[in-house]
Length: 314
Image (cartoon, rainbow, N blue to C red; front, side, top):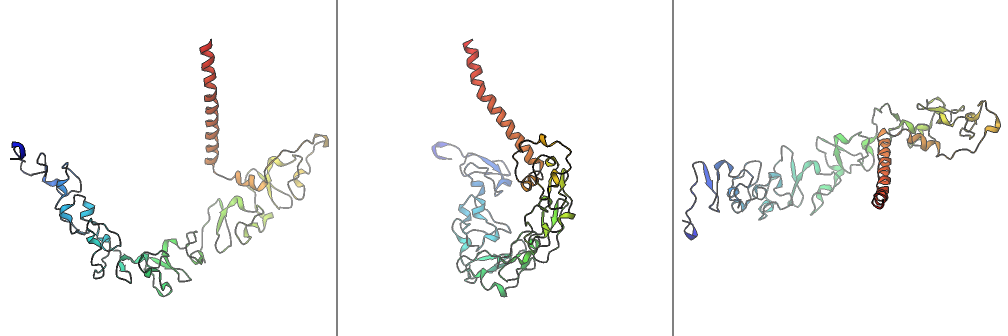
């Protein structure tokens, strides 16, 4: 009997009664990490299975994560159990691997970290910073590569990935890169591939000037023509437009027009900038059209109230 003369609910075979006494749930729902009883009592008194750690107060907690945190949470410097039992006795604790990944203990014995985080340029042993001390003599894990200055270990996948990760840039030295058809290969140590439109644009984009060498032999992009002296490429529409763009004046030579046709030259951006703009992806053009479309819609919206007012007056 429950209080008030109410008879306790009798559950069928294979079902368990919730602590509230007014609902039964299948036995298989017990400790399935999901509340099926309104009061969560089907998630009490659970036994943690590997690779999870059993918190000391698990019997009184309905949140599975607070009962059975992952084994990697043991002595990781962060409290996962409601009672903090996952961070007790760490000095005597032998760091267990996490999914076959080795863990090592900080020098003060208070915390376990993944071995791959030792000498990775970021302090994980917050109490004593021991994971970032004496890195020059530290041997990196097999899946790590040591920077030439010995300052840190980085993932091997970061070696020659065109992104400088070592403070001394040694992870990008002596690399062989395959530039795409839209790129130019520099002979620089650090900068390896640049956009093809940056070749012979009168700017040092490779950091060693290799993109500005032998420009008379370099072909222009489609729709562009080269000055007679080979110094630069200009858009074809700039030929014979009454404005000298080539240093040798070849863009205004042999135009076959009377001198009186000359008019006011159009205002235009620098050729290098326009060369770059014409080389960007069509996505930029699509975004510009969408913006123009939005402006047109806005103009229509602004005219709408006037139309409505006119119709009401009439």
